Image (cartoon, rainbow, N blue to C red; front, side):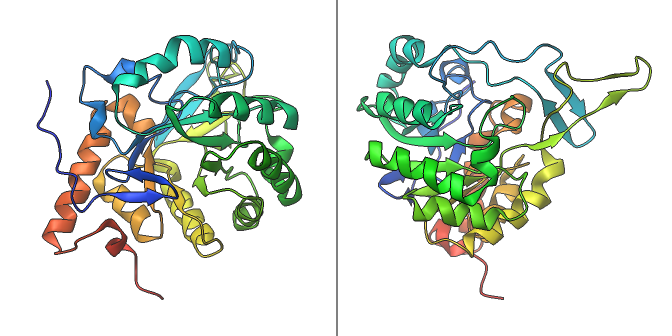
Length: 309
């Protein structure tokens, strides 16, 4: 059942050159390729769509079990399964021609050359308005481990991609580091237009009856409400370290959660795990932000920013 579209006034934000009708973005890996959600609501009412992450070649992902529900979220070890860039461009991308919502494509590689080649291929499409460069994949081997944890390697990789494409570029950061602000500064200095954070936190679970890990890959990524306080702290730290837009994510299940991220400095937010619980969460969050602004007499989303401490 479709609801009436949410009013767009007061909610628009800018991510560099990309204008969003509202600050709510659906996160990569939790929204399929968009078409899977079209029966639940009008995709044109989203701020932006980030479909499943894309690699240069098809990836089969990790062995099952791949998901495990915890007390405060879920563990996933999907392993970035995807059909590869050729299939994406030929079979998945055409669907978005009928959608007005900005399309930002998440991509990743295992080498600098792969990142550069992928960025170039994706930037050729006029339908793709931005790229989200994933340098933080916690549940696959060889993916971004050095890039996401070393400021110098982050700079080198982002700089190489920045030189290759002019399309708006955001960098998705890993929380599995000592100083995420240092990584964010390196991304900014290398030419990133925005940073998004946080990705999932490395974690595991054990079944005491089978005496085996709950995930086939043993280690997975924890997401959901359990990580929200950590994500908020990291968004706050990064916002105070860079001048480019920050996109916050991590445990946002309702409008109140999103408002917290906007208050600590996020320009926009991403909905991830909540999409798997309730497909209509993203629109409910956008409505809730609008209602909060109206209730408090605030005219724009940036008005939510906390005053200086």
